[in-house]
Length: 396
Length: 117
Image 1 (tube, chains in turn cyan, yellow):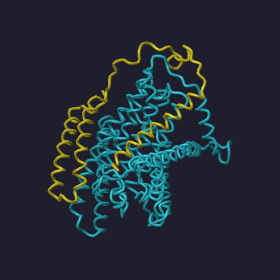
Image 2 (cartoon, one colour):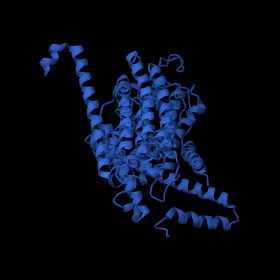
Image 3 (cartoon, each protein chain N blue to C red):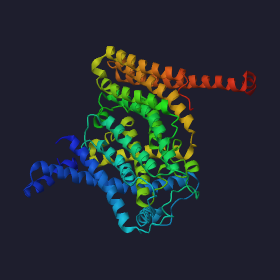
Image 4 (cartoon, one colour):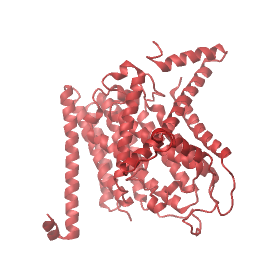
């Protein structure tokens, strides 16, 4: 075993030798090593977050036929650092009548809810924060803290725009957590485990091939949970100016902003872990853990890019449409998919791999197709009710 | 070592880093508050009344349905983990469990409660 095969364990053993050499008891030394490891991981994430500011601005510019930041450094790479310095030296204003304690905790919780998600992200076969046996539930629980921070920020600002933004975020949360939980059940059924590491290890075939519809529903629900367009009702800049973070300035606003970007990237990563094999790609993860990290970051960036693509292409949908879309379409569809997946899994579990794969894939396609057909015939009936039978016939 | 110690460390460091960033900004930034600056922002119009008022949450029924489904899905996770070992009988049991709750959703829908009112 060398540093290049298992860097985490080698570094931990080396540090343990040093700390115990200083006369530190072993449990205390272990906790200190854990603390240092977490600190390093989170520092790297914060640097990555700064990079994401640049990526996001550059990509949105390209989608809108602009160039984006291009003045500071090559390709404007220094721009996010300038942004941070600006945020640092801004005055931190608190509106009169705000609930000061809640108001100050909210931006920190916003960032924390994202950072703690990385505890269950397996970066390589040997590099994993915590191998929780309930990793999938942990994702949901930690994500809920992010929603909580938005509600706290919106409520405590003593501003009507912020309050309406927070109310809308609750509406989004109570809708899209159900399809998200339901689609998280699908990798759980297929892998037979809730741990993120086990889900990756048992993904000899990418789960997106076994459950393409599940991957799609997860992506839609993730975009909604992130509060990104077309579900950015909590911000809604044309209606609520800026929504829940309207009264925040300086670094506290920066925390909300950076938290949102990293959250989107993290969910790109979870999409890769649950449906695209995580760090596994053509056996590269066996060669070196560093290659495995590169693979998972690459996959996460693809997921993040897809989320950005959706954000800058689609328009914001109305709140009642959003609730109807979830409760009358997505939730029944997700539960139908669970029933079908569980049945197919039980029926086909003894059969050859190709039959299992084909059965899963075709049953998913069948569910998606029939759901679309039902929605189409329903909307045709609605149109006939509104326009009268004749207008529809003439229209066709 | 207990894995939840690590989760605790993530919580701790996850709070320390944003606290540090906000703390540095608080030290570096100017502090010149005045009453005009601290007024509630409302596009230049003076705010009328308090923001913490009673508010009609049109999605109240949705929230109740959400609560039921949220708890239900948590119950489904142990079933999903052990699905391979339990066999077809448990699958059908689980499906019946799901169908009972979907029946609840259909009932709410037919009652016209899933409308923005």
